[in-house]
Length: 97
Image 1 (cartoon, rainbow, N blue to C red):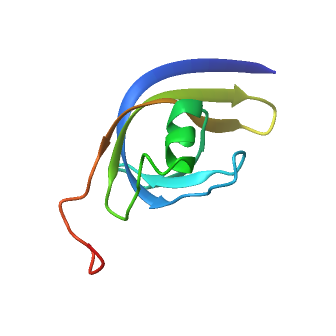
Image 2 (image 1 turned 90 degrees about the vertical axis):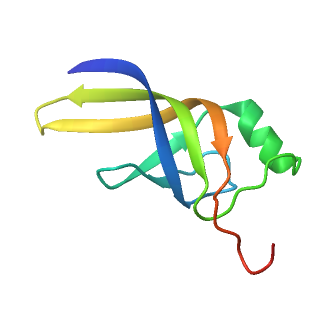
């Protein structure tokens, strides 16, 4: 088994979030949606403490870790956000705002 790890910065739109620490979020980039694990403890703590409020249409500028696992079956991609660099609020307002 062989794997390659890459780090890069990318912006994502929020599709769905999970408030369970180990569950994946669904985020969207320009190519489609991906399942991703959030490893940024400071960001997650900010959500839990209600210092950060997320809503549909918000965007996240993130430092991403991509692990490409090359095995006999094929290539398995695993995405993790190691740091949320910026939270950009949606320009659209929900009816509750």
